[in-house]
Image (tube, rainbow, N blue to C red; front, side):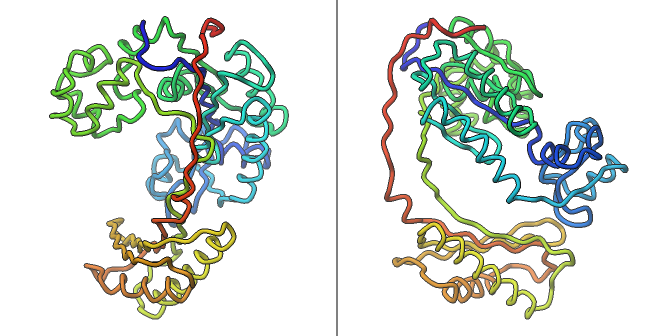
Length: 364
């Protein structure tokens, strides 16, 4: 297969059921049991152990639904400081091999190891070493995908989960993608996959038969993405300095709120917390968004953007109250959130250089 882009060695490392695995590791009594991180009576599941997933419990699922699917599900409250602590340990391991690390969240990241600090030729070997070090230092397992670009590495990391890895060698990319079910393509969600099924598109080889124009007509600008990735083309570089585009705080309430005074108190508290986070990282922003989730799970967001940066919690609070007044419904509220975007961090973009390196050292 000829590549119309520089060949790189990319690893995607993804922790296995990270939050739930941390809880099972720290509390051995939970090992082997179905565990959900989140509130049992309110909110949604943040993470589910593999034992819970066997019952159909998934992240972002309402806790009530999760309990119906798995009556003996054990809920544990999230401990984000602990997850961040372990995430830093894992990231430090990545930096032993390369500085080109692009975190996607606390539990996954891309690594460009085309050139690496240890001079190891095999990308497969590096992935094994990283996974072994993670287990030795944290007691947790990770899965990895290795290939020539971020898209393929991301898809590959799911193939042998949990606690496994998969290399998609350059010579095998075409045949691999042709046989890959479309719902396994990173970037194809459930709705899009169902639409593809109705069009007779079930595998990569079916998708590949569609012309670029056909895919754009069917799926809008995403059509161009699908056209490229089914051919193994994905030119996005590993960005070690990801630009933070927003900062957010939100709260899910144990009891639904309806009283105006309670709402104002929560908005004031959220404004103070948002300001504290921004100050800690020297971040300013010009666009404030209020997020409201109602008792029936319907969602409303409204933003206000100004020419100058917001600089005080009073400004967030005053603006959030004005946005609250624009809400379309007077219904009980289960969640409130504030986020700031159009940040000054967007002015600090950095450029990274990708190298053209032969790929002979890849292993299956």
